Image (cartoon, rainbow, N blue to C red; front, side, top):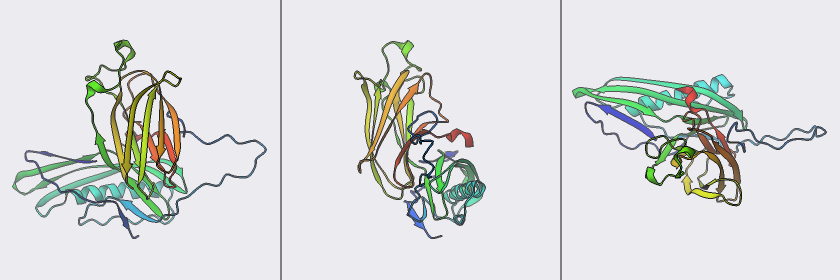
Length: 290
């Protein structure tokens, strides 16, 4: 979800950009996955790549033109594309006829290669001064890009979900909690859809992995292409959890989620619908671009 903060006067901003198509694991710790291979099996495993083409992103209208997809993206050109795209979005979002000064900056970092392209993390900052002493500051949660020769998807349109902190899962024994309920930071997770189709997703979080496990959270989301969810207020309690994700078409993945202390807000647990439509759960280093 984009956040536009203002000082001195509140600058009203209209809604922008639905998802457009423009011309032009199994581990909660390290994101590793994939089955082990026999040493006698020398045939390479085919790497799935997306069939869809286009650029899928929310694109605020404005005077700045969005960059073209790199024809043969490398790590460097994928990062530069995402950085420029973020800066353009910020500038166009801040633009208005009475703008006297606009400053917009983008930042990006390579995440990893996959599915015939590159995952890139990106964000933007900025400000604008307008007539009549109106000022606006721009800030947003980081976005996750997939950049390939035929397809670009920017997953950064968050829907925030906040709940009563007193209802967040916690132990009655304060020594078993990593934070004091309603005072410290709870554990949360994110959901990103990098596929070009909407997906109905259910996420279940259970405390413990045995027969006496307790359901902590059970949520359903409809995540559009380019969409994301920041699911707040999961738990305050140390321990091992099991997170299970399922789509309406029957794709399923799960992993252990170990919380020995306060969670790292810069590497949130993240559920990914990949560009080829399958599921992954891993930690994404969003904080590395701040």
